[in-house]
Image (cartoon, rainbow, N blue to C red; front, side, top):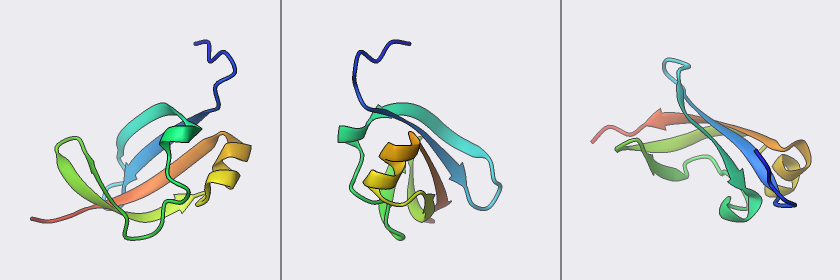
Length: 77
């Protein structure tokens, strides 16, 4: 895949309880928040999740590594 100078990060989201992959995507750095703070809520795959951890946690760090791993906990309704 050609990115033509775009700053793209490989992002993976995992379920904390099972360790299963929820989603993965290559996203432009501009579409990502400055940090994936603990307790940040995300909606994906028809459910609401809360961020448990992120490696690395800041935009500067995941820009440098070009990868981001986010561990989520499904919010119970």
